[in-house]
Length: 437
Ligand SMILES: NC(=O)c1ccc[n+]([C@@H]2O[C@H](COP(=O)([O-])OP(=O)(O)OC[C@H]3O[C@@H](n4cnc5c(N)ncnc54)[C@H](O)[C@@H]3O)[C@@H](O)[C@H]2O)c1
Image (cartoon, rainbow, N blue to C red; front, side, top):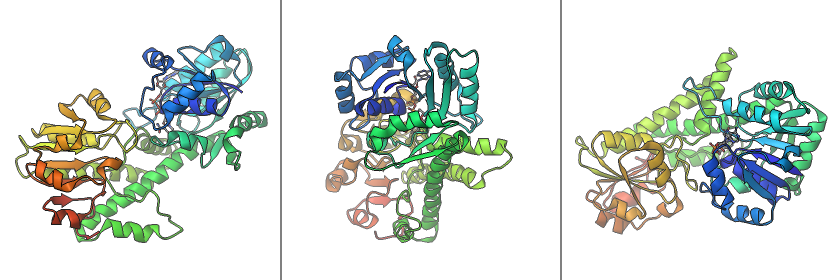
């Protein structure tokens, strides 16, 4: 099928590459001319495992092209996907202005009847609004559908190609038929399509992300309780997660969730629910608990430096909001780095992919290091903020010999209290400080 994707970010580019790899003919457009120029030269604008290889293949095969405008050929696409950003506004609601701009572009340039699938995460009712925009003075019928995306940065391609479910929020049977056709190559092994109305589909995406955020916040609050009353969060996680009704995924305590989705989606859902007169107490609490966790981790790490932080040297290992991505949006490393800089510490960062983004986005006086050991040389504290694989088992003897003061704060609970205390480090995790795991 011939399709067009608007937006070449984490979602748009992965979707465009994935659909092209499944044999569709795709154009991916973006208003960011610099990004399009990069893509046209075959450069991948962000780090996502496996994406470069797939892009290379589909570009070489002539199934994916890029532009700042929809080319003549693609003005008669069968499906257009809107995958533009929906960042938070200061009041916590989602800014859907880019979705509206994209909708007006489609209304003005599309030359045949088509389906418009909204992949961006958008508040309930957005499809209705976009339908009104594309209907206004339309030359051709554009049928709007909600097709939320559930991919995760770090495993985005695999998630896209083999999703747990494909939700189609549609208002008519013909739209369902077209979208089922489009997704057919991605579900040869088993049918994963769930069809529903557009509003339920829009809400499904927020409900899924909020449920995950609630699980994380629940475990994070328990980790603080563990520290306060002398229990071990690892043991609690295993005990809780072995109940099949609960399951063992998403039960890890840590520095608080970040990224471009959970924080903004939790606050946007809470905002939408309040506006509807049905406040979601659990969702709101998850957001508050997350802020409290970031503060807790920041303060606990700082307290390892003693009263006077000025002149102390701190290495932050990992600044991406999670492993396997270069995304630093809402990363929990930010409040920590800020507090350290404000207190007069020398802050060094090590991250295999995200250091440049961190410095570019946040403009803090921190120094990047390729090597985690170089970053730790002469340091008074190493804080692990991202669970990159190579950080899970460093050479602790070497690390000990390099540091000025052997303080470790493990915000991801990837090391073990007992071993490290024995090895001469002063070591703290999150909710693990009384356990011997
Ligand atoms: N990042 C994720 O893991 C993820 C997962 C699922 C859903 N989502 C949702 O998908 C949407 C996109 O997220 P993202 O992380 O890819 O965003 P992003 O910020 O990485 O990319 C958005 C892109 O859209 C472009 N854009 C803006 N207006 C445009 C227009 N009118 N026409 C064409 N391009 C335009 C921007 O220049 C940018 O390159 C958001 O609503 C997000 O909540 C994200």
